[in-house]
Length: 113
Image (cartoon, rainbow, N blue to C red; front, side, top):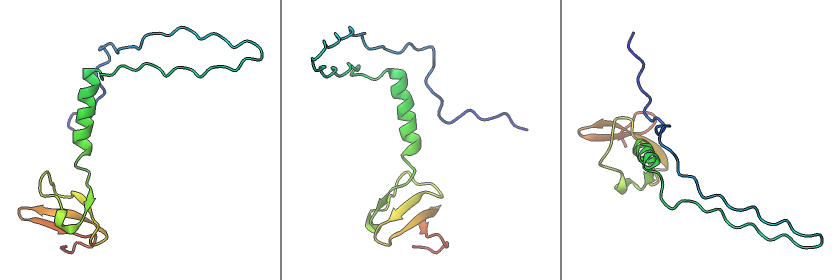
């Protein structure tokens, strides 16, 4: 029995302190008969923490090859793998890569398209 594989995406380390937005003072309560004012929008840091940025980059790289859709002439030619899904809008059907060299696309019945 082999050792369990590490997860493909692991959350960023928990030891990295997250940046907290500054605390805001409590607004005054409206007096009787006075309409309350709208709360101010919360202040959010403009820069994402580097640990989260690295995690989202990994997530993007994993999710990016999950396929796409376009016309037959614009089928992808790079970053393909056997089983790569693609929706061909010209044919109106999903297709998959059967082999890479040469690249062969097949439909759900296994017929080359």
